[in-house]
Image (cartoon, rainbow, N blue to C red; front, side, top):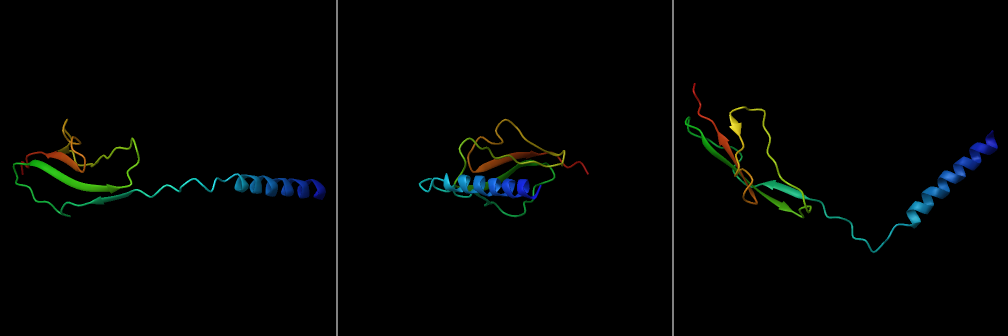
Length: 98
């Protein structure tokens, strides 16, 4: 039994070394994606509601990735133009009836 465990341990070590040895040193490590909101930290809107704009920048964006904003507030919604401009998310804030 000890002999079997020793052989399995050596096999695991050998496989680990094989995977490390296959690493290609010419492949560049991917750069981290940096997302930063550039608009004001707080926004005030009139009770009539209106458009809420969030501006942002992305360094090293990943091809094919998309930016989305989410909220649990049912009085803030998206429309067909919410993501029409890179670096900008435009949301619709409903009328404050209270």
